[in-house]
Image 1: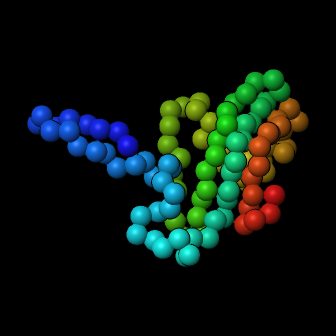
Image 2: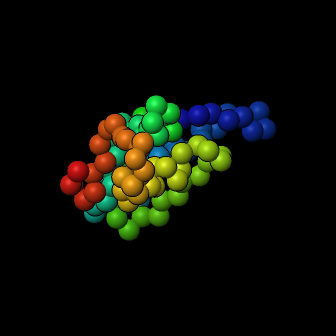
Length: 102
């Protein structure tokens, strides 16, 4: 957890949601993973567009991808719905499971 100083007093900032083990306030027995992504890198030819992404997206939770232009948001989403399969030069390393299936 990162610390921030405000009015001379150090305070602890909350853990980013992407790094949290589970969403706050939800018992772990109710979490159903929809996508489980482990060490995914996505390439277009020899160009690595996305490097080493790991995350879990849970059912009935809101998930947002934010970042600067060209950071790989759309590329990761295209991998989730297999649109990159239509790009001849595209390939992926790592694992994307959808509801427990590769």
